[in-house]
Each structure stands twice: as structure tokens, then as C-alpha cells.
Amino acid sequence: EADIYQTPRYLVIGTGKKITLECSQTMGHDKMYWYQQDPGMELHLIHYSYGVNSTEKGDLSSESTVSRIRTEHFPLTLESARPSHTSQYLCASSESGRGMRETQYFGPGTRLLVL
Amino acid sequence: DQQVKQNSPSLSVQEGRISILNCDYTNSMFDYFLWYKKYPAEGPTFLISISSIKDKNEDGRFTVFLNKSAKHLSLHIVPSQPGDSAVYFCAASARGGSEKLVFGKGTKLTVNP
Image 1 (cartoon, rainbow over the protein chains, first blue to last red):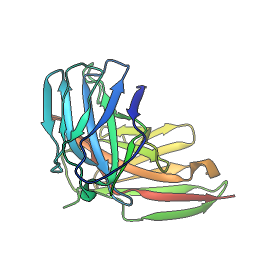
Image 2 (cartoon, chains in turn yellow, orange; image 1 turned 90 degrees about the vertical axis):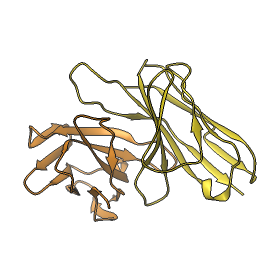
Image 3 (cartoon, rainbow over the protein chains, first blue to last red; image 1 turned 30 degrees about the vertical axis):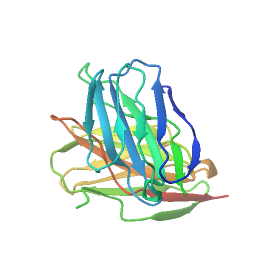
């Protein structure tokens, strides 16, 4: 099972501010993901990475950006926060290969409120 | 168009009884299915999975059943405990390509003492 850490857990910020949500995992997983989830709704994939220097946009359009400079670190950045960005952001990682289907393991999430 | 559907937003059961959570899917390419449990303000926790080559997988109190012809799976929790109260998400992926997970909207389970 993966150990995945997200900071901050909660963030209240004003409109127009730049924010970075941190995500780190200690298991050396090559795949990492960012999801956005609102209450009563499904998790929507907004970004994913299959390794260092690899990033792709997910199924849900997002104004955020990500980077993957190190295997263990996958931060998400919003250049200018807006109230519409208010949501819970969940980071996940998984290990691929070995002929097994992957299971994604999630961090505790960051709950973002933009005023 | 939702490819993974959990049509019951909520379910309430008595402690000690069986909880049955249902999930339907539309994409016939899905061949791997997972259940996650989520407490408020926390990330989802992996519970159990099943491959399409099986029709049942069991882990302790949790059993997942897969009916491929009906494109339906269910999670059984026996016996249910108050600590099981959470939102349960069904997810699916297809072999090949990116194997990204597609999630349902979740079912909120309440187990009453």
C-alpha cells in the first residue's frame, strides 16, 4: 500500500491568488494522478503522470497545471484561484507492470475554498 | 454520459445485517473493477477489486460479485458495523490504453447501532 501525503489539508484563499497543492508518495510508484471531487459527485480525473517529465490532462478540463520533476512529487498549481475552483482535490498513485492490474491509492485530499 | 452508475445515493442498514451496494456499467471494455470507501474530508481507501475473469472475490467481511452479462457488480458487507458508515465508490478500468479509472457517484452507507 502506498503512503501518499498531501498538504495543505485545508486551504481558504482569496480570488486571484496563486496556490500550489503538494502531493508526495514514498513507494516509488511511477503513476500519479490528480482528481477533483465535489460532494455527491464522482471523482473526476484532471491530470495524470506516468513518470518523470510526463504529464497529461485528464477527462475533466481544469485550469490547473502540474509538474513531475521527481518520481515522488506531483504538485498541482492554480495561477489565479477563483470561487469555481472550490472543491476537494485528491492525489493518487499506483504501480504498473508485473502483469497485475493497477490499484490506485489515495492521499487524504486538500479541501480548497476560494472566496 | 456516465459509464459507471451507482443509482442509490444512500443506504441505511442495521448493525449486524448485510449491506448490499450496487453498481452498473455501460462500457463493455471494462474488465477490472474496484470498490473504494471514503470518509468525509479524507481520501478514498481501496477495499476490494475483481477482474472480469472472476465472478466473485472475497476479503473478510467484504465480497464483490460481478455479473458480466448484466454489466452489474455488487459489494456485500456482512456483518455490517457502524464503522462501515461512509461513502462507497465503484470504479472500473479497461485493459489497454491508459487503464484510467472511471468512478461512479458513490453510495452513502449508514449503519445504525
